[in-house]
Every structure is written in structure tokens, then in C-alpha cells.
Amino acid sequence: MTQFTDFNFKLLVIERLMYDDGTLTPRFDLGAHLVEQGLIEYGGDPAYTYTVKNALEYQVVPAARDHFEALEISPGLLATVEELLLDGGHQVYAHCSPVWDGEDDLYDVRSLDDLPLLPNLKRIRGADDFWPPEFLEVLQERGIATED
Image 1 (cartoon, rainbow, N blue to C red):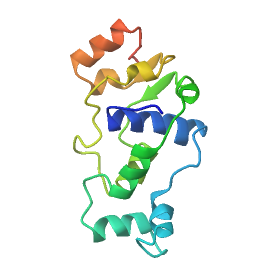
Image 2: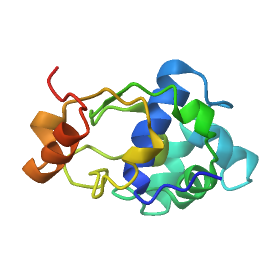
Image 3: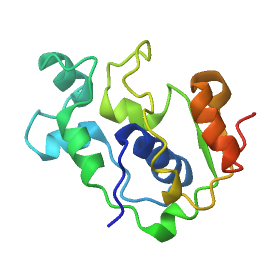
């Protein structure tokens, strides 16, 4: 089983594989998951309702965190990742924090220790704008492009 050390880095990979490429299935939907778990009744936007009702607006909803932390991604699937994008509008973030507005560091990557899990990664778009110089140095050393 592949273990990620940085949850937020894993979310970037999940965004690419599950929501962009459609190769990591089944596609997770927080609202449907909450209804299936009996945590909220269907109607309106169950993920938003659950988040507000439980004062979870600016954090990862525990049910989503549990799901994504336990989600296994095979080395073969990880090897297909050639590009990642840094963007506060990712679908995976909407399924983790339906009320999140992108105005804090909730989804900032804090470690690049997981880079070896992506042997064919060639580019991280947006890194020049959002990541610190020490991260950019690591990417440059590994031959990973950062320009758009």
C-alpha cells in the first residue's frame, strides 16, 4: 500500500486521477457519502448543510478526510501522473470542505516527501506562484518544471 506523508499533496494527486483523468474510481461525492452513512438526509445540498450544521466550515469534513486518507492508489496509477495543478478551485477541495473559500492555508502542501511516489511527474503548474523557494529548488533538482 502506498503511503503519503502529506495529506494535501495526496489531494493534488487525487484531483488529477479522480476528477480530471477519471482513472481513480469510484468518484467521491461528499454529499452522497454523508447520505449513505446516515449522517444527513438527502435534500438540497447535503454536504453544505452538514458542514454548516456541524460548524465545519473552515476545515476538512472528517468523513471526507477519513475517506481520502484511507484511499489506496496503486503504484501503476501513480506512475501515470505527469502533471499537477495548484488551484484553490479543485473539485477535491469542494468535497472536503464545501464552504471553504480558499482564503487560508488549509490545503497548502507542507512537504515534498511524496514526490518519489510520482516517478513520471514532469510539471507542477502554479508552483511558481504558490510554493516557497525551497520547494521550487527541490523541483528544479528533480527536473520538474513549474512554469505554466
